[in-house]
Amino acid sequence: MSTARRPAVAIIGAGFGGLAAAIELERHGIDYVVFERADSLGGVWHANRYPGVACDLPSSIYAYSYALGTDWSRRFAGQPEILGYLRDTADRFGVTGRIRFGTEVVAATFTEDRWRLDLGDGTTEWFDAVIAATGVLSRPKIPELDGIGEFAGTTVHSGQWDDSLDLTGKKVVVVGSGASAIQLVPAIVDDVAELTVVQRSPNWVVNRHDRRTTRIGRTLARIPGFPQLQHHLTFYWNEHRAPLIFRSLDPARAGLQAWVKLKIRRQIRDPELRKAVTPDYPAFCNRLLISDEWYPALDRPHVSVHRQGVRQVTATGVILSDGREVDAEVIVWCTGFRTEEYLAPIDITGRDGRKLHAEWKSGPRAYLGVAVSGYPNLFMISGPGTGGTTTNSFVYILERQARYVRKALEHIGSAGGWLDVLPQTQERHNAWRRERLSKTVYAGSCPGWYTTGDGTAAPIWPGSHLSYGRATRTFDATEYDHGGRLRAVEPVATV
Image (cartoon, rainbow, N blue to C red; front, top):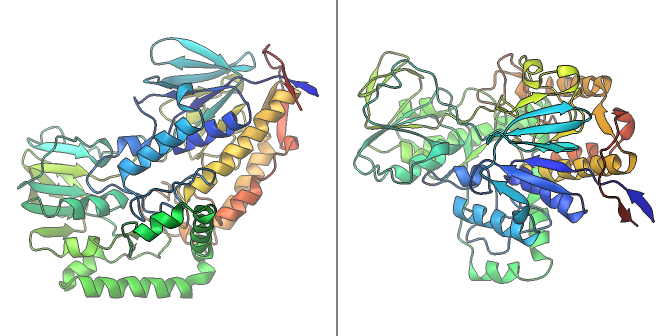
């Protein structure tokens, strides 16, 4: 028997990442509370309710490895099923009762060897450690355009969908052609009178091969061990694509690009439209999108595609960058999220009054996407350098981060005080990332949120998911500075 102090831990966010952290701590007896600003858990799967919203990965791998769903209605689950899965899983592991809904953390300050959290209701609470699982897909991005407040019709962002919105017989402009747009457009194309898609950069779109779960599939899912086998086979099948992010495999990537171009030729009759929807950058430069309905939806008589940006919004529609005017009754912004603003809008203050967002103004830097030098006992789930993967399920990354953070907290519980990743450890890690990224397709002119304003691929892990698992398998306390003393908490006996 040995005695250990239990650190009091705050988890910010109850999406996939926050729940992964909470379940990990729950399973290992570490005290925690989850702060969630929304009225429900689920993160993006609570917020995103636009028509057609679904996962772009098979349900067999878009689930926690220790809580695989066995009753998915189709190969690619829709939003209601995924949200239901997260709620059921949180209940199953005893996490739901630890979540404080409708509670926003507006500031976190490291002072007197602890973290003070300032909440939206004006109160403050103190914790020994903080796990920030706010994600990067929580703050919708709408372009700042002239006239945007003058539009006489209805505007909506895909991440803030109005369930009462009726598009039947309307002239609709969809701005963007990313993951949200390729699901939404086919879902509404039969309802609208006219549909205009405004895209600056088309995406590589491969086949989805979705299907409903058959009676045989449901029977197999009930056989002990079968869901785990399916999960592993699907994961490793996706994992074999990881080397395609490196430029040394340009010939193999060229084969995939030729196949997608053939698909475009078969599904779109108009040569000009084919040209408009064909990417001019390498595949895997950003996430491959999947759809069997995207190209056929664009090749409809009442659908038009413009490969420009929006220059201005008017009372009756939008003006494109080439001066063309497009009338609209509804504008749907499929323009993504503020992915470059990690942990925003929380005001985070570290050692000696350091301000995290000021230090990250030129680009976010972290160690393994989990810790930041100068901010003791602040851990992240889906932090810089690991968010947004192009080849496999991000849930794997979340689980490995949760495991690593749990090990760090166990060290804090036994040794006391705080841990602050050493500056040289963080810089060595980021130098390795930069060197690796220079050899990948991300180092080019990738469109979209994978590339930051200075041309670097800040969000990306430069390798396979398995390599990240190896990098976070053990917690090495020598990579951290130690200090402080853990505040008085009830000792707990451990075996």
